[in-house]
Image (cartoon, rainbow, N blue to C red):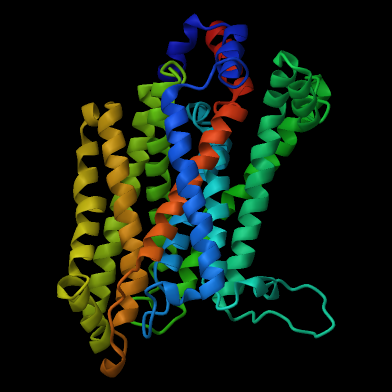
Length: 446
């Protein structure tokens, strides 16, 4: 803990509150934030427009066809739900393990989880032929006695995502309550005092408040921890239960969970580095925090690399001609460049993290995290698209070529994520105030 808390020695209990709260209450928006917000807002409008056109014209505006009935939409869904896993890991598991280095990054990582999981939930709905009937997937009492098909992967996704969102939202909000009270007490306008006061739920920092807060916070952390494994395991079973070569694999649940943490920690670094640079949070988000995240990124990368190897090995070891043909097509076929790019992004590039200097270089880590995010998205495209375009019947083979609407929907979802995150850092504390104050007090005592 000393390495993490050492930069806090020059901070006091009150100055920590001033530094973090002033980002929300006092500091005016800087021009980089304004430019990024305008760009993300334009992208969000394009995203909403693409969804509107999709509802009007149908999924034929995408490049999906037979046999590739799943295209970018399902790949985007898996990618976004994976990104959200790092927030739960940092907040819940590291809290239970008493890892104090989580303190500076857990708040915005939790927000990242909410935004990513919410966006992920949009894509399975968009991929329905009649998305306005998505509520048929929910088991609600109805006079027609139409119940969900429990053997459908869509129903599994609805329950996995909704559970993940509810628990993550509760965990995030409960952790915010003491900080909302701080903002309420420091707000300079009556409107802000009322808004933050209502959200703070009458928090006064009494001993009984803290006792109940810590109990609920630990209970929610215990509930959220299994979700790291269960949610993405359910998503992987969407593929593993199918008999399609490239999908039907028992390695998918652990492989998907490791891949989710891999892409999730890459996104944490992608957000943390600009955040600490533009808001001058170097004493709070230190090189030690970045190095720890980089170590987890490297470890998850090796598990993902093992998944690539074992998937190829078992295909040849099984002697199944269809699995072998799938692997050969993945290596040398139409989507071969995608596969080799995935290996370069997810295996080769992260090896630079073996060097301590690279792990402590913010801009090196930013470049690596962006490459990993690209590689993990391409991996999801490879799994979804390449496995389907060559199935059992050569007469049904065909290539998926994304249309402009596929690309607008994908980049629009990234813009929407950035839009939500930029609003978050201006409306709520991106770093936990009360947990940083506890670190300062512990450092003073030591």
